[in-house]
Length: 291
Image 1 (spheres, one colour):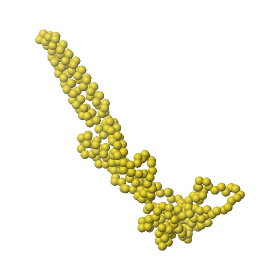
Image 2 (cartoon, one colour):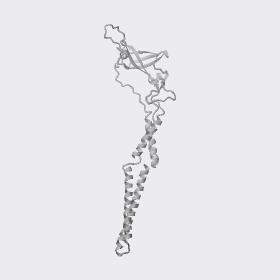
Image 3 (tube, one colour):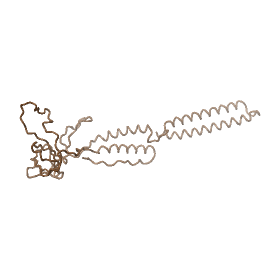
Image 4 (cartoon, one colour):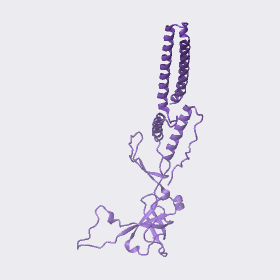
């Protein structure tokens, strides 16, 4: 592409040369026509002068066509936004991302709980590789009996003990929400109580309890452990239905690859275009993980 822009100046210079040749040939023909009546110039010389004018005109037309053809490839464009450069940049970007994504960063900070991939195994996009659990953000689902929920509210403090640490170590948290249904209501085959033969069974409702992060850091808990929860129901100022949106895990670890690819493309274009150093990229360093 840089050659196209360089050829534009070259073809323009050729047009100027051909224009000069045509002017000189026309002047020669004009001088010979002036003295032709005196017989000082033969008709053969005049014929050769006319042929020289025609040849110079044809050469000028050819040079003009070359200039117009080359300008059609570079009109209203620069080297960075030329279609050929943009097409090549897209290929470089795809190759850069494919190479960069050979390393898969974890979207969250946590611990590997279940790994299904092995060394040397070929995987396709969308294949689960491992489960990563952020142990600093675990919660407790306490299954309380329905008769225990009358005075239970969101925001009430909770004291918990885990069997793994024993009753001497207490965790503290608070109620953050209630499930919309009992465990049996969402089972694969829910109970059918429409018949007359029905025995009442006390139902249990999952109650979501958030734990103190500092206590979790000192005494980490694993998923699936058994815990005993005691809710302090003295304060009933909280609501029975949660109105806070659920936490959605988001990460920016993959965003830097696109910025790095764009910066590399800009550097290559600047280097090959002869414009000096590449412009600085606006990429911001991404953190290792974002919860």
